[in-house]
Structure formats: structure tokens, C-alpha cells
Image 1 (cartoon, rainbow, N blue to C red):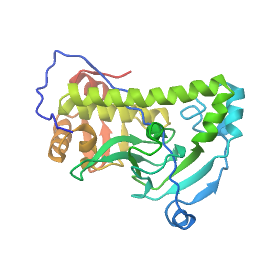
Image 2: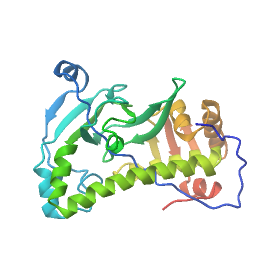
Image 3: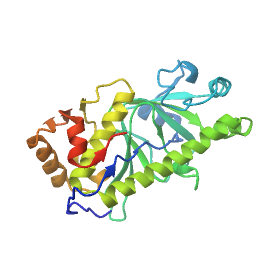
Image 4: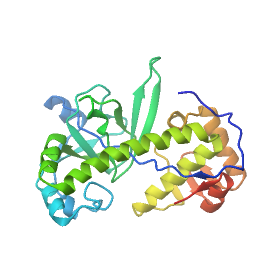
Length: 276
């Protein structure tokens, strides 16, 4: 992916904040010994119908009868330690993963061995229907902090969809969300300069955290500057320089990974990003 950090900034264009929703993800099939060491499985203690994330996750927009069908599926929880992979690029696709807590990144390995970050996922978001087309994961998912996921067998989900129009709609929505996310990322990389990209990223993350009951103006970044740069098509130096510029303009307060957005409206106006 080529960086376009030097794209000139113009005030004449009006940019809309891309919808950078996370994809839907599967579970890695590993020997029991590996599971015990890497990602312990625990029985579900909460059903979709009474989960505190139900309005952000799979049950969102579903009728009560369809949510009850979801409750009948055999879900399992997995705990994933920081820096640990939930699944790897090329592994067999079996599960859709819903993030219960923590933060993940999805990434690809480029031909020269470099990592390309393709998305970040937080609680209530689904990771990776990237494996549906070929039956193998097209990316890897790695925890950026200690995390927990719900593992939903994709075969069970499709069986359920066969007998329920509501669940069929759910599966179609998940596929569409992945397409929209990829299109949004392409717009972010192709039509924004460095300042606009970072502003869009921070405002989008702010909105997602607010929807989960967290502060929209003050939060801790779980990803490194290098990972943000990989995702936004920027060099590490440009990411650091842009954070410094925002701080000098009194748009942000930055203390390592701790961010405080001083004036979200000013941040949006400064780079022609509409928040919606």
C-alpha cells in the first residue's frame, strides 16, 4: 500500500467521516493443548438476549423470536492474551467471532514480509467473514490487550438462517458491512491527506467508544503509532508529526497513547470531516 502523506490539503472539498466498522470473524481450529495455552475456552454465562452488548452485536435489529433462535446456538467464549493471535492468515474458517471485551487488529502479510493492518475491532464488533469465500482466513486477528470473544460456529449460523428470514437478513447484513468497511478504507486512503485521515480515524473511534458508554473525548489508544500508520497508509514519522500538529493547534492533548479531544467539532471542521 502506497503512502499518500504528501497529498495537498485543500479546504474546498467536503469530506464525510467514513464508516470504519469492523468485520466479522471466525475461530481458529487448534489442538486442545494449544487451546489450553493460547486461548482458553469457557462455557457461555450470558445469552445473546441478555448480553449487555446485544444492541451492538449480532442481535441488533433482530426480532425477539430470531434472538431466541440465536440463544439456541452453541456459543463458546475464548480469552485471548495481549499480543496473542486468535487466528492466522490462511487458517481454516469455522467460526464468526464477536468481541466481548478488549481490542483486536486484523492484518495481512505483504509480499515483502511487512504487516498491513486492515482494521481494528472493539467490544460489540464482529471479526472476519473474510474466510467465507475461500474457506480460509484472508487475514490474521491479534489481541492488542487481554480480550474475550464469543465464538459462533458459522455452519450453525447458516443452518439457522435457512429457517429464518430474519437470520438470513442478519447474515446478508454482516457481509454488506464488510464490503462497506473496505470501501470506506479505500476512500480514506485515496481521497484524504494525512491530517484528514488521522482526524477521521480519531473521530470514528470516538463515536464507537461513545456508543459503548465510554467517554467520547478522552480515551487510551490500544494500538501503536506504527499500527495506526499501517492502517491509514502513513509513515510512523507522519503519524507522530500529525499528532504533534493537532496538539499545537489545541485540537488534542496527547500523552503517549492517552488522547483527549479538546473540541471534537473544531477537529471535524478543521479538516472538513462531517460527524454523523
